[in-house]
Length: 239
Image (cartoon, rainbow, N blue to C red; front, top):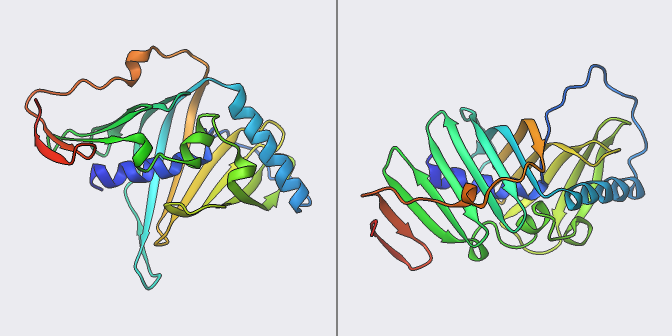
């Protein structure tokens, strides 16, 4: 997958929050999944993200494309690497497999570095895919209940599957997340875009509130790299 398209999927996936891939030995018994239960779980998810300042983890991202007819094209090769999030709109995705690439945001500007193509795309966060409820919820700056229609698809004492439909126009159709109903910790998130393409992302080796330095979210422009500047509308070599 070209890195620019991949970064779009990243940005969309972020709407559902931080993830942990903790395993469970046995399935728990199903519970009532009515509207009140769905709102209760969503409130716990919100409280969890409001309480933390930053997050880091290893990640695996899998995307599945569909034709306009709805026929599946199958899943693409998983992408793996390391990610760091922090409040005030900051993040750093370091892709290691299947090819090295980097996505960095300092909360105002996002940089997408395609190492193989020797190309960098620069775009303003407020005008691109990280705008609105998506980024706000991820970084504790929005309200999930205010931004989404929420439905609980399955519920047990250990896991709940929520479906989130945006209340206002968005660049995606719906979100799905699997959360611990007791703590609000999200284990897995899925986004379905307006064309039916699905992207799933899960994280492991999660660490919270590690206080990453501000330099984590800086991007040093490599010498001689081509810059596609969506903020200025220009393309050319690095200055």
